[in-house]
Structure formats: structure tokens, C-alpha cells
Amino acid sequence: MALDSLDVRLLRIFVTIVEAGGFAAAQGELNLSLSTISNHISALESRLGLILCQRGRSGFRLTEEGRAVYEEAKRLFGTIDQFDIRMKGLQHRLNGTLSVGLIDNTLSDPASRLTRVFARMTDEAPEVALSIVTRPPHELLRDVITGELHIAIASFPRTTLGLEYVDLYEETQRFYCGAEHPLFSRDDSTIEIDDIRSYNLIGRSYWNARDLKIFSIANPRATVSDMEAEARLILSGRCLGYLPDHFASRYVSAGLLRPIRPDLFSYRAPFQAAFDKSRAKSGLVPFFVKLLTSEFGVAPSGRSASRLRAGR
Image (tube, rainbow, N blue to C red):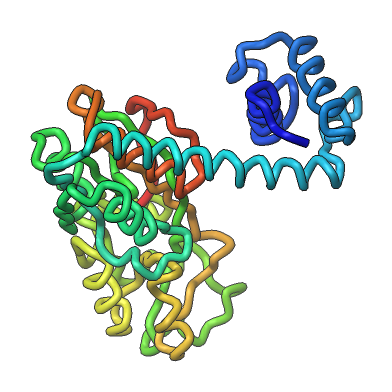
């Protein structure tokens, strides 16, 4: 069938429903009544000649055909978004320098698609120069506030009023010990929180020991400002601390590190893009944010700071 604008609109409604988890859950985002949503999906099913989902008292569930249509629709909208970004770049002839701040040691994370984002930025806005710096997350937020950076991407220790945040992905953090540490050869089933408290723990300077809250200690034995420094101390066999699993994996494979009680001490650190919306009404920042949301497959709308998040 040949798609028209109505089909595209109905497909967007369908994708929203799937990602929300059902008709009722999608009401707020679509701003439509349940009956209107149901009518739209019925119209789409009629257009496609397929049953896309089961709905009713038993809940919402995609059919096999519905899952296939959802995946194809996502690919379609990704292509449309890329076309839209490219056209805006051509229309406005973006130029100047975009300053982006990152945290250290994220290159090995398969969930991070920043390499692809920077490639597209270079291809689709060839007159824009990139300035990329690597700093601890609290310094990145400071530099976005002062205007030194246009945008920062990290797992932030706090949220700052006046900035907008876009959720991108999550990073798994695990609690590690080195091969020379007494806990390295102990079975996880014998290790409890009280056991951990008796050893030297590493804190992150920008967290004020909040990353070690589960252990209820006043002060860590060592403090670091980046992941490489923390890894060095853990590898020494004298300290315990958190590392991203993708960063630690090479040392785990070599038998130099092991995670301790992943069931108890692991957590997911959300990564976000932070920017000053008042400085981002037009130009480079909206273009880059559109690239981020397109490449990471997330909602394009930013949100204001509202609560403290756990992370690096």
C-alpha cells in the first residue's frame, strides 16, 4: 500500500501506544480519549488489513503482525527524522562551534551511540566545528550553566534548576575488588554489607560519598575524580569500589578484577544530555539534541530538573 499523511499519523499513534504499554497509558501523551484512540487503531488495522493488538479486560498485547508493524514504523520514523535533520541543516546552513562536554571512559559502552552522533553531526552540518572536553560531571553542569559548554552528556550527581535534561541510556555499575584483595576468593554467598564496611572503600569526589550510601560509612578511605583512578586503586588489591561494567570487563576477563554481590550492590546509572534551554531556542543545540534523540531512539522533549539521580 502507498502511505499517505493519515497513515503516518496513525502509525505514530500506534507507536506511542506500544511504547506507553497500552491505550489507557497513552492517553496523557496523545491527549485523546480511549474511544478515539481505539477508533484510530481500528482505522489503521483496516488500512493495513492486519490485527495489530489484542485489547480489552485481559490487557494490551501485540500480535506477531503488530510487533512487525511496530519495528517497521520505528525504522520509518527514524528515516523521516534523519531527513528532517538534514533538511534543516541545509536550510539554515549551520555554522560556528558546538561545545560538548563528556565524562571519561564511556567509549567501551555498547549502549553509548555518541560516536555515531558525532559522525552524523560532521556529515549533516559540515560547516560546524566541534569542541569536545572531558571533565567530571559536576564540572560539566557548572560549565553548561556558565555558558562555556553548549551541552553536557553524563550521569550527573545532581540536577540543576534552569537546565533541561534528555534521558539517553543507562550504564550498569558494579562493585569490584582486585585479585590481591582478601574478598577475591570468597564466595558471594558469604559476603554481606558488614563485611564490606571493614575494608577500604573508594568514593567519588563529586558524589560526597553518596555512591557508598548503602554501606553507611562516614568517609571513604580514598577519593577519586575519574574511573581510571578508581580502577587503579581497585586493581591494587587494597580498596573496593564501583566501576562501569563495560570499563571493568577487560580486567575481569584477565582475572584481575571480580564483581562482588552483583545482586546486592549493582545499580543502573542514567545518562542524560543537559543544556540551557534559554540558550537553545535555535541553532546548534536543537540540531544536536535532535541527532541525539534520533540516534538513541528516545523522546525528543527535554524536561526540567526535578530530583537527584544516582550515577557516576
